[in-house]
Length: 190
Image (cartoon, rainbow, N blue to C red; front, side, top):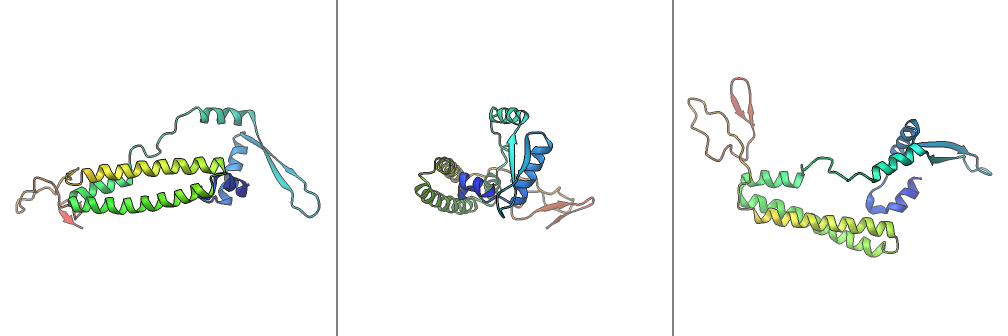
């Protein structure tokens, strides 16, 4: 089953863990989504398991296909977080984050173009690769959007509470290259 799934999706989807497949199968059985039976094989070949979808399973599949895909983490995105943090350090830091991300995405795009040529005759793999290419291109546009704002400070962090002997915090908030930890009686820099 692992080999069949990987062949259908192509190597670009990533390998599957055999243990995970069995875990999913057992859960689907417990939930009544599939039935399983052992089918004896001729000769010295090991018995094989045959799984069939139930009506409940078909209903759940129909429901799942009818739902829109939603981001699992909302709009949280690590690249956005890096750009926001880099903006605290200035334009060059944002540009460096963008350079690193662009380089990685262009490398990924090159790999995907090669895979597209190699897997063109496999419709499932070709579609999977095409979606990956479109997403990579969209991420490159996000890098361009970040670079266009490289000169802007995109967020401000609150500074430590000024003590009587400390000078007031700068109008732009905390020093972006340090993290402030607040204890019950004092602020200390990490």
